[in-house]
Image (cartoon, rainbow, N blue to C red):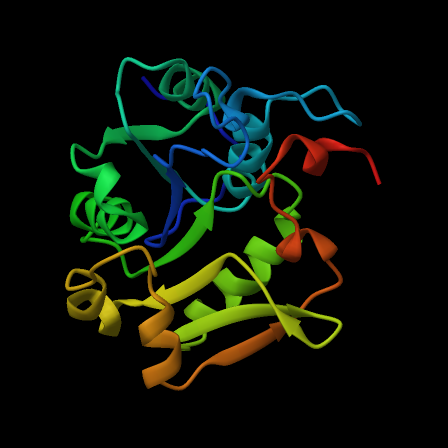
Length: 200
């Protein structure tokens, strides 16, 4: 189910969270923002997010249905794909599902599938920080933190004990965080509404 990718073999894993419902994008539930096409490249949102990570490390995508079009697109792009049965419980459920299925890794870079503009160099910077022994790494651009976020293996237990829809924000508040400066506005840019698809 996995296509050939260009990443260098590494004990670290990328986790791409793609199980959200995206109700702000289409309250009627008939359109999935992860399948929308970007105006500048024409690429599908989910695939663009995946390809950026896949240039740097192997990626496990967490979806809400293994037989969905999102899952098929991510698998075709080169991701391993796992279904989160309780995705409706919030982002923490998806994150924990991914960690459970990749808990053998030395650490994880956790990205959101609705952030297709994050550059591969940002993933590479976070990976380098984790390899240097940093326990939590976040990118910053123009002095503001963004996504994705890297976690070392020392936080395995904390990541498996999350709850609610806050993801891993609590860990960022409770433990030292290493900021990785990047020249990448994409760390602040997500696709929440149709207006967010407008080219900039």
